[in-house]
Length: 434
Length: 152
Image (cartoon, rainbow over all chains, first blue to last red; front, top):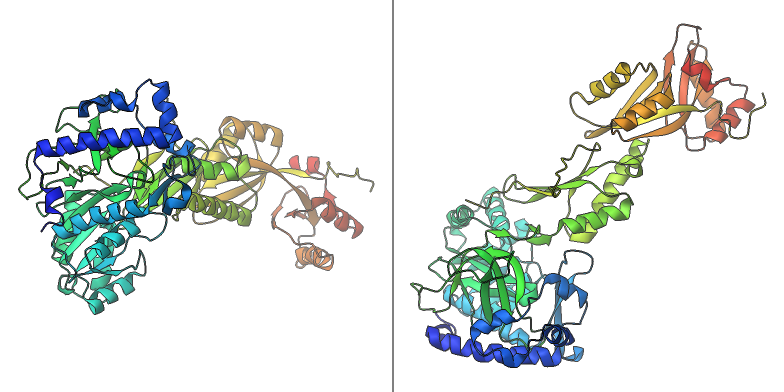
């Protein structure tokens, strides 16, 4: 099923023609209204009128997460703050987070993008969508919410957690669509079984999943558990939120909403375009956004783009599932975590340079994060109670910084391996590469 | 007795060492001290499921400190005092009663006996060590000078 056939089934040359028009318009809009772009483009001596073809986008400098952070909180807005109806935020690599602002129009666009995806999966106003993504500054919750409401579905905005209640409501309400992170979905399945339900008989039609890395094997487990197809959603706060790319029922890549986003794949070292189908860093440009147009944003997500027609009716290009990052960001329980945030928390407890290692595991279906911290005279007391207090305090500072609970283990000095080039800060024992 | 205000000659330079609760950790550090000819006078180990604090009084704390530093141990010099008591029933409780009466809360204590006398030595630790010394002294309880403990 299609939500907006006219938009979703354009011929390639129509798409490109529309993209060029939108690109020219938004570059000018950003240049005229966002001081950051005005300054940056002037410095680089590139101006809106230099965009004569889509390929000319390469003339424009990239926008990075750090650029956005430096404009914290509202420096990237192209409109008066009064016109911004909603704000979301994601963690920054260091220090301040990144803010994303939405006007009334932007919220409509966002709903529209999600509505297309949900409709592609066969959902209508007959359906009940149970949204386990967190409602809050994280975009996952609201993005799904707006899209589901747009198609007239009934939304159950339960957020993450209260898992037994999730199962109970799925059963009582006859939820037809469950939106989860893959690991949380698997966990709900287990709890359902523990509670005496057959997850395959809960009446689900479809599962939407996103906001963490996954493997085809995990998808298969999710589908087997609930006996329904599971489709991936991709997005990021900086560019709006979920809905940048959504899988169709072919499960052969995520269709990027090319009328709202212009995707590029670059070599993250040279910044140059890579040939179609080659894996590299995804760079995205908002082609239509009022509150905060972002041009050539380096997502640091690794994927490849495919332009050959999909078996479904949609003509938008497809991106592969994300298989890696070009930086050291990790996603734990759907939350973006940077080692630098852990470092920042540790510096609050001790002034000495912290030596630490982050170990992420998924013993069963849920992520666990352990932070090993080397003790130093600063982080040591002769008193066991005080030592346990230090351990607890580190845990609290980290949780305050990254938003999720971690296990803190104090270890002896020099017990964390040092490497000459770069310390191995993260050991991710979850396997996403098969 | 006429002590200096900070009672330095009474305070034992106890070494408190951080160890993770893993096989061989205790052996490794004790072996390191042995190899460097450092003799242990008294030892106690406080542990949790993940880590422990090894507390040691050695014959040469300065050397002990140097060896631990060179081998990257996390440790602290945590001053403690040694009190001599009769190695008979009630010996320790009589001291504890004095502390109780004077409202002093101990962080920990451990005791050892030695061959040179029939007496036991109990090591006491609390946050305000000077107050502890003052109270013990007022109650005529003998605090063994640090040098004497090191060279027992």
